[in-house]
Image 1 (spheres, helix red, strand yellow):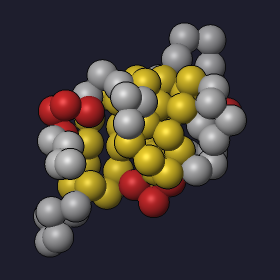
Image 2 (cartoon, rainbow, N blue to C red; image 1 turned 90 degrees about the vertical axis):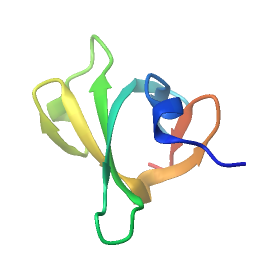
Image 3 (cartoon, rainbow, N blue to C red; image 1 turned 30 degrees about the vertical axis):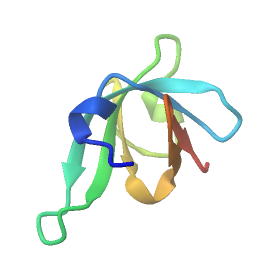
Image 4 (tube, helix red, strand yellow; image 1 turned 180 degrees about the vertical axis):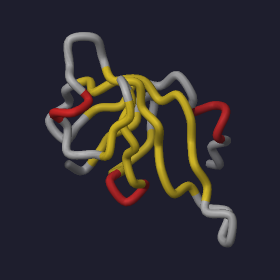
Length: 79
């Protein structure tokens, strides 16, 4: 089943333990391949983006696509 980028926006992003990290706000694409290269996630209130193991900017983190384990009703990370 194909999933389109717009359908993913607004989904919760969970770490490997199932804890909610935040909400998917945007996607970055590799312009050469057309594949998703990075997820931009607005961090859940009460969490510090700086304390997470990802590049951050303000209250958002940039998660490499290689950190995604699976996409279902939520986005599950492998770390």
